[in-house]
Structures are given as structure tokens and as C-alpha cells.
Image: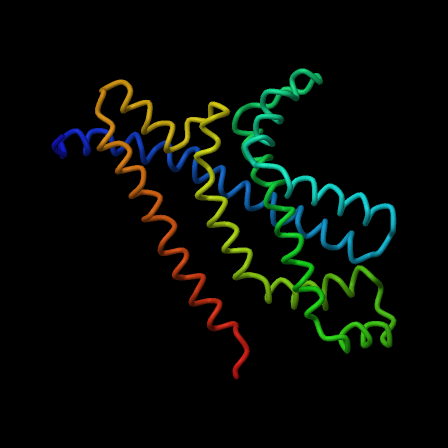
Length: 219
């Protein structure tokens, strides 16, 4: 089988369009959900309200102990049986976001616990309200410490967006397979899909490593 450059250039715009419209959008929205929800989970566990902390921990362990694909199938195929129907894109974003939020929660927890004990004691001595303590003192330091780890999860999420094809989201890989099925030529679309993923994820990984080195304490 020979590589057909004309065919490759003909299908590239469609692949890029679906990459931006579905793969990239799903990743960005999924990261936003994971970052916010993961922070909420981490704060709930730090507040040490027994019922909320235990319920949150149980939910996190359940999500982390079951495959992402089953969670996506449940959201898209099972929830309609309970009277709640989600569009493929909404189910995909929600599935990715909640799944990775349960991993981000532990990352945030480590960042919060890394804040020096003296910072907490100072807020108590100054009688700062709890909301001010978290918003102005604890979270800025904690989030800064965990940004590289959160970035790594963002890359991992990006590379798992092909799972969305199984709930009918026309993301990059599904588009490549559809083009290949229509033309019976899979080499070019699948190769281009892989190269697009590589072109998007590899520079981001290098940037994250550079940021991590700059944020690492001296010595």
C-alpha cells in the first residue's frame, strides 16, 4: 500500500475541523470540569465534616475504581432509562470531567497539605474568616504547587478523547475511521489522526516539564 499525498491533503481539513470542534472542545471543557470539581472535592475533605467527607471519599473511590468507558456508557446509554437524556458531547465532557476530577482531588489535597502550618496559624491569629483564608492564603499557594500535575492529567484526558467515539461523538479518531470506511483507505486518515494528536500533546508536555523545573524549589 502506497501513501497517497493527494488523498491525505484532501482529508486533512475535515480531520482538523473535527479535531478542533470536538476533540479540543471536549478536552478544554473536561479540564474545566475536572479542575473545579476536583477542587471542590478536596476542600470538602479538608473541612472534615464527617458525613460530607465520607460521602465524597466513597464517590471518589468508586469513580477511580471503575473504567472511564463504563462511566461514559452509563451516562449516555443508561441514564435515559432513568429519565435523563444527555447529548453525546455533554455526556462525554461530563464523563471525562468527573473521572479526572477524582484524580485532581488528590493532587489538590497534596498541594493544600504542603502549605506550611505557619500559614494556617497566622490566619487564625489574624482572625481571618474561613472564606478569606482559603481564597487569599491557602488556595493560591496550593494551586501553584500542583499546576504541573494538573497539566499532566490534562494531557492524559486529551489522549483519552477517542473513547468519546464509542458514544457517537464525531471526534478525531471516529472521523478518521469514518473516512477510511468510506474510501477503504485507512493508512492516511489514521496516520494523520495520530500525527495531529502528537503535534498537540508533545509540545504541551515539553512546556509542562519546563514549567515544573522553574517552579521546583532551588536545591
